[in-house]
Image (tube, rainbow, N blue to C red; front, side, top):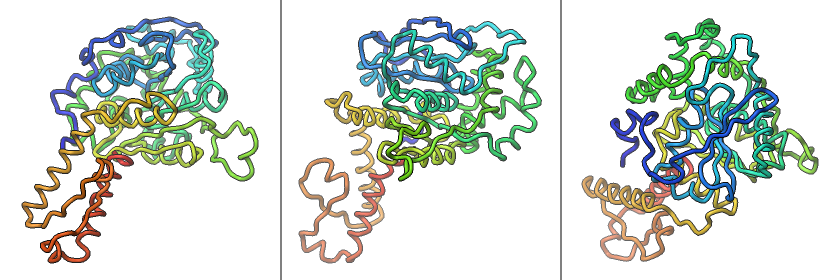
Length: 399
């Protein structure tokens, strides 16, 4: 099984053209005046469908963060059923002019208010939010304050806590460079760690080089630093898990929408995502952790992310007719074949499977119905069943 996209595919992921040329490959841009400055909103898809509103992470914008993902083969079939609006934070769009030195950049709470202004301007009554990193933080604040306007949240690497001691210590030197107008090595090093994590940096130099090149060539460093400053000065999101004291009250600290929290096994924000998920309503929230993945979820595991989003959207009542993608079934069958070959080469006896539907087979139901099976140790099937269950969990919980 291939755990990562190949080096050639990932080398220019941020710069290459979308993989599928559809109406979603082109975007319509609309500048919108908000109480805290102008924001540029790009639209993918026709305007008469269910709305998904995205918000990007620091160092990216709507185009570089989401356009490639939504037009990829894994996500295109899902995206065509929705109207997608990508909100760019002030000064973060492509070819943005440098913000004046006297500009006071909006705080995280104020950026959440700009999202409400965008909803009002575009006459969006309710939508599904999709945020990454800083964008996930902003959309969570928006959903808490305007709960009637968001009924679903897809959060990747959402950090809801304030800046911690480790992050503060890590930023001791990079923050000295914040007033500068251009990138410095310590600041670039911090952002690469922030997006990828240490493990991905060590194993995928192609991603490191692509991200560094993107930051140096494609974005306005001065404007990105202003957004980063706002994020580093963030206040904790006042959010709490429903309990006996607030479950019947209309508490402004409880997320009322359905939430999907996504992170990677070696993501630098994994602990923050777990903390965020712990403060969500357990009846309305799901936690997904991708194995063999760092912080760049959309670049490292686009297929698994698309499948998790598909299941989430189906849980909200959308695209219920859409079955498991062919690539997903193929991957599972390939895993089973490789596992069978591995056990055969090790001299192990393979258990025979019942003729049952795919889901039951995949969950590891076996039977002993031959004399040859009588020579197999009694605990063999327990171990085999646990192996199959663990494999199933890895794909559906820790994908």
